Length: 354
Length: 131
Picture 1: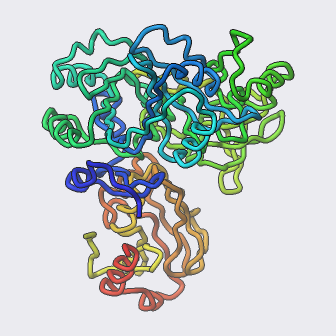
Picture 2: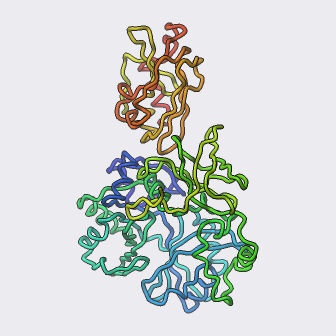
Picture 3: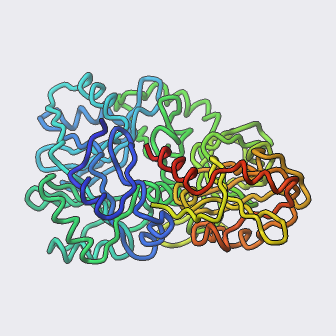
C-alpha cells in the first residue's frame, strides 16, 4: 500500500488524479497539467512535497560527518540558515542521491528524495560517527513557487520573506521556510508539523494559489534544467557527467569525501560524456530512452517533455563530451532534427534558448 | 464519468467511428481516451490516400504524458485528415467527438462498422480500464 501524506483527502477534494510515486499516493494533476505549469511560471502555485525525506543531523561530529558524506562542502555554510545543494556519492563517484542541506543552530537538516529513502538512510547510518540521525517523518512540506510566492507566503505567515536570500532559510517555532525550489521560479519550501499542514494548504487555496501536481513539477524542473534523480543521474553516472560538476567541492584538497578518489581520476582524464539540453526542431515529443545520434557517437535522452512555455519538445540527454550543435533523435524509427543547447531552457519566466 | 454518444461505434483501443451520410467514416478518439491521455500536444495523422487495415496503426497521439498509437477501427482508404490538429492539438481534449476528429476514410465495407462496439459495450471497456 502506498503511503499517504496528511493532504491526501485535500488532493482528492481538489480533483487530484492520484498516482503512486516513490511509494506514495501523490497527485499527478488536478485537471490540466499545462494550466498548472503556466500558473507557476506567471503567478503562483503550491505543491505537496511531503513525500520528501527529511533527516536532521545533530551532534558534535555533524559537520565533519557531512563533509565526508557529501561531495559539496558544508563548511561553506558559515551561518545558521544557509543551505547548499549537493550530491551524495558512492566510492566510484556515482550519484547515490542529490539533496539540500540547511545549517541549523544545533546541526544540519538534509532533504533527500522520496524514491531513494530505502538506500540513503542505511548508507547515512553506515557512515555515521559522532552524530545522531533523526528522520523527521512528523514533518510535512509544501513548495510555494512562482513570482507571487514570496508575497503570498509573507502575508500568510507574517514573516519578512522579502529579506530571505535565495538558498537560505528561517525558522519560526516548528516551521522552517527556505527560499528554494525545483521550478526555476522564485519561491519557498515550507517544512511544518504534519498536523498543521492542512490548515496552511487551505489558506493558500483561499488566497487563490492553485494546487500543482507532479506532472507539472516535472515539466517545470526540466525547463529549469534541473535533474531528476534516477532518471538524469544514477549510481552509474558521476556529477561531471550529470551537469552538476559545479556542486563538487574539490577544494580544500585534504577533504576526504566519499567518491573523491574516483572523481580525481575523472577530472584528470576528462569525463567521456556530458548531460546537456536538447531542443527538437520539428514536431513530436522526445521521451526518456530515445537515442540521440551525434557526429561523435550516440547518446540517450534521460528526460524529455513537451515544454508548455516554449511550445516544442525539450530534453536532457547524455551524449559524448565532444558533441555539439545539430543532432538527430530517433523517434519511433524516424531521424528527427534537434539541437544541443546549454540548459536551463526557462528561468524566472524568461526563455533562455533561441 | 466520460461521455459516450450512443450514435457512434467504438474500438476497444478507444477510437470512435461515425458513418456519415456520404458513406465515409469519420474517426477520432473517445472522451475517455483524451481524458486518460491528458493535454494533447501533437497528433501524427495517417497519409492521405493511405490504405489502412482494420486494427493497424493509423498514427500517434502525443500528450504531455506519453505517446500512444491510434489504430484504424475499420479497413479503408484515408480521404481527409483534420488539419486543425496541426496547430491546435488541444482540440482533441476540448471536443473529442466534434472538431477534434482525426481522419476520414472510405471504408472497404461499410458493414464492418457492425463489428465494432456500441456505446454500452464500450462503456464496459472503459469501466474495466478503471479497475
